[in-house]
Image 1 (cartoon, rainbow, N blue to C red):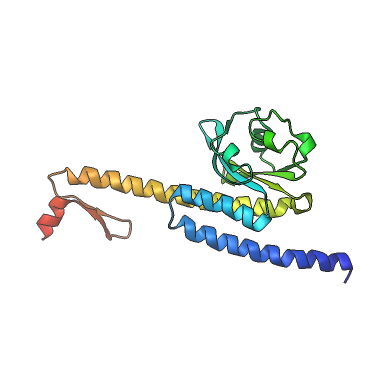
Image 2: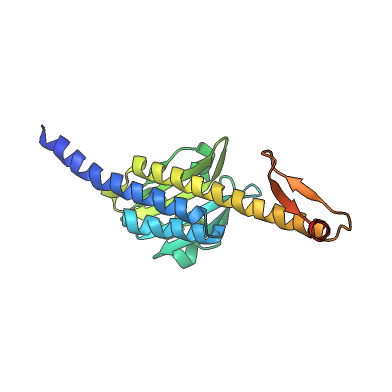
Length: 212
């Protein structure tokens, strides 16, 4: 076996183990934690797994991108920042729908998102976070040039997108149920709701009193 192949395999094994751990962590958190805490977990994971000096996560909101979680050297500067189409190279990466790696000399110091990295010797990795049929946002990380592995970051973004969608669906379902419960509680008639398998899913207080 060629020496280059041995090195590639040696690097590939820990990356596979890291991604397996990331997948399990995000699966567990998406099933239990609020969305914002999951976003924080994703930003922390990028710092730990990729040895990034700064990591952040942006989500699409009303046609704009907003930084919803950030960790590392420039976290305070990034948190809450917003950009619209064309205002930042970060927005361009999302519009293109493809990962990008930028060198510091490619970054405009006036860029509203990436400006702090214009004089950084590290590489900027920008990876769109997607769900089926749409883009959810962007993962960003400042890493050593040799660690700017697009395929690894793309897989990380895929896992992040899945966790975000799971958490959103869980929160939407909980909100819907709370609203339905509030409506039911005000109804004087007995109401029973069954699922598609014929199992009792919801009942209001009037039904509980009627059934004893």
